[in-house]
Length: 88
Image (cartoon, rainbow, N blue to C red; front, side, top):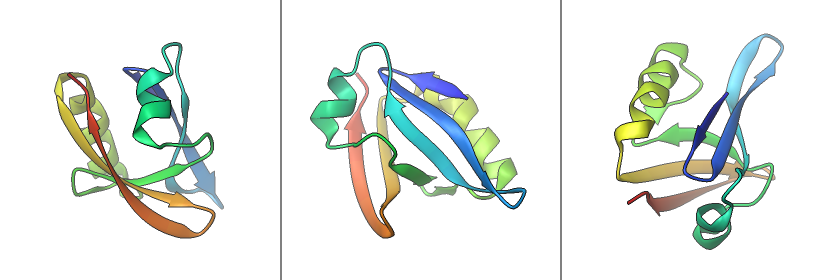
């Protein structure tokens, strides 16, 4: 589980395989709300890294604290959507 600037993530395993990371607002939810994210959105890609691939997911999660901009592909009720976040 990871928390970055008001967004909390939690790995979402199905049958032992991670299908993405569930997103929920953190303690400061302004970024989460202002970005258009909704509780329960599932991040499947961050900055081109496939979050269903454990090695890529661990790499990007380790880099998140130092990022100033993030492009996230989310799955919301079966539909994919791209959201860009300014973390400055």
